[in-house]
Length: 580
Image 1 (cartoon, rainbow, N blue to C red):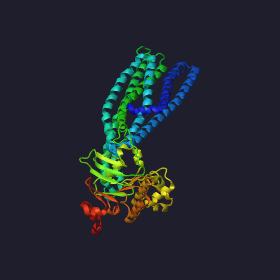
Image 2 (tube, one colour; image 1 turned 45 degrees about the vertical axis):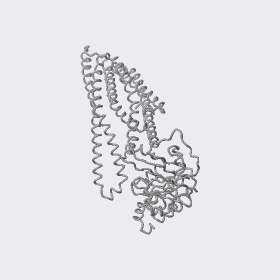
Image 3 (cartoon, rainbow, N blue to C red; image 1 turned 90 degrees about the vertical axis):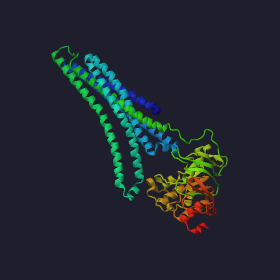
Image 4 (spheres, helix red, strand yellow; image 1 turned 45 degrees about the horizontal axis):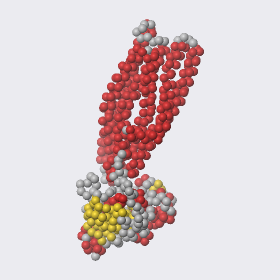
């Protein structure tokens, strides 16, 4: 928790201000019972109106000052906690951005969302309570005890009889609650994962009429989580009522004893100035016991915050599996863009066998290199190695003769234009999405990218390139999303363009026009991952993958005569004439 709390340093001025104001506010609170006692003893009991007026005005002034200071302390406490929450969320977000896909897979996207929201909220609440309770309670406990002993030391012993009981109850509650809270966080991760998956697949659920089935699954998970939260809340709710019962019992005993003393004028329990001091003593005792109960609640709050702090630390302290080397190598060749795979093998950390084995080929400038193979043959994994989304297990991926692991990631990515297999567009205008490729792109470059990507439909929209894209691009068709994704990559003046199955939603005519435009208007290395043979017929080099291994390399004509696997793919999609 110490490391997570260290992020309070940028706002320590605000936190210190809040603490100082809390001290002044509680000092005012401690003065009020004494002033009330003076009004009763020196004014009401003696009938002295001047004393009532004088002490009443002082008490009103102190109460008003306490109100102002208390309001200011609440403001600064809230500002401190919310600023702290903002800093934590920013730290987590920036850290996640620096992680590779394999790092994110270790924790899981739903868990990352929970840690960035729920766990940060727990820490934010903890900081607020830390300022409010940790400073507030000791002042009232110490100050109230001194005042209570000053009024009557014998009655003050009641306070010390109650405090151990409250502490014991708090300890028992902590032992019961902590395991439940750990389990609650894991169940929250699971519910988030389930919700995220089902919202993404809502069309599939409806299409197969599985709504009731999914409802039942969610209901089961939701009941488990809500049941656990109910148990957690019931146990937490026990603490305060028991403390209140103890306070009331002590007050009953105090008032009963004091009333007998005052009535009989005996020394069994003597209050120096009778009614006024009794009133003040009762108030001080309530302050002390209530502050002790609040302090006891911290024994629950601190371990709970500690669990959230550990979960946040797991993210912040996670060392990226892929990071820039200490001594980066600068690519000497400019605008070359040759990509070479040299005896490359790769396997995921949780996979039993390698996904790719001994891959070797070269993609050259101004030539189209296509990669084709059955589903699961490792095509997407192969191109992900170029951008260093993953690092090779063995061998080398060379960019202009330099191992990509020796190049600064930002430098490498500047030279690449990538269209991922899943077409993702951000909510906003079409222009804003295109500028993700290059924020400094001119209007001429945007128009060129739209022309090559066959995005003529953009000009037909009412607002043209300024037209809005809804969340998840639901107002666009699959082909339109794919073409805008392609245009976004083409906006970048890259040396290598990678299209990972990026023409699958296009009709054959649009596909052909787009590939022709790529050849005519781009001077770069083009790597195309495809499922359709028609998309790669005119490629300069075709790499055929089969179960993670190279089954053949050559042109369409060469592979038709030398590679049986390629022949089977062609035969399944085209007629026998295509094999000639």
